[in-house]
Image 1 (cartoon, rainbow, N blue to C red):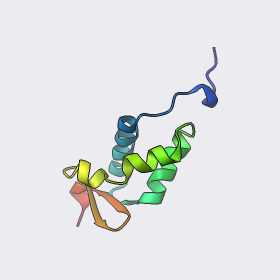
Image 2: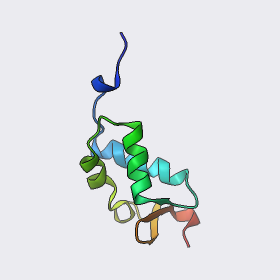
Image 3: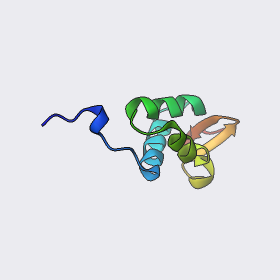
Image 4: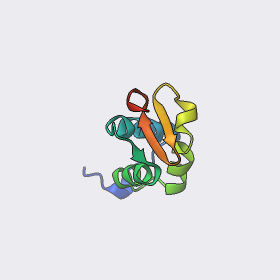
Length: 82
C-alpha cells in the first residue's frame, strides 16, 4: 500500500514543537520565525499553518533552556545565543 501526502495525518502541537526545536538546533546562527513556519509547513503540508503558528510563537517561553529569542522573530539555540 502506498501512502500519499493527502492520507498522512496532521501533526499535533507537541509534534510541531519537537520538529521546531530540531530545526532550531540545526541552525546555530538562528532562524527567522517565518522561515521556521515555512520549513515545518513544507515538510508536513497536511498540517494547517494556523496550527503551526499557534505551536511555535512562544517556543522561547516554553523551552527557555533550549531556545533563545535575542531579537524579534529570531529563534536561536541557547548555546549559541548572545
